[in-house]
Image 1: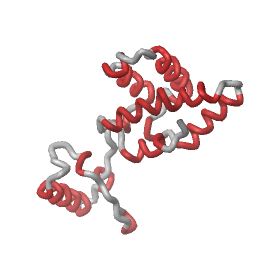
Image 2: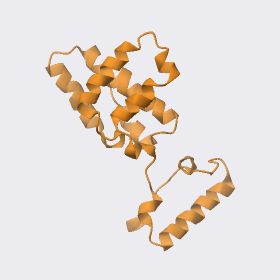
Image 3: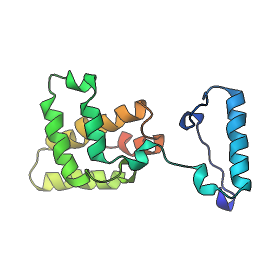
Length: 152
């Protein structure tokens, strides 16, 4: 990295590379070395799909999953996600910070919402969708970290 900092990265984000192969790790390292020499620092750490995914797109993807469609309470997360999307719908997933989630919950409580309703909007709906996207390698661990610590 510029300034001499080191950065770890997983091979899982590389297409056509086996994340458990030492040979593929060496290929990735060689690719990074060439990029450094050529001055292509920006290309070295490109974002995954999440860089272009908004919460509206995430909810659309999530509600198409059979496991979500088969839920007995399908309507409840859908209503909660719609309310969540009123605030965060057009925001990129990776740009929403934990402090903003906590402020969203706090604002709902100040408006008289029950704690369970406020928590449901962030946890049962949005957090569940982000978690599913993380398990499908659609968002990075850095994004999931903000959500993992959000109160459920």
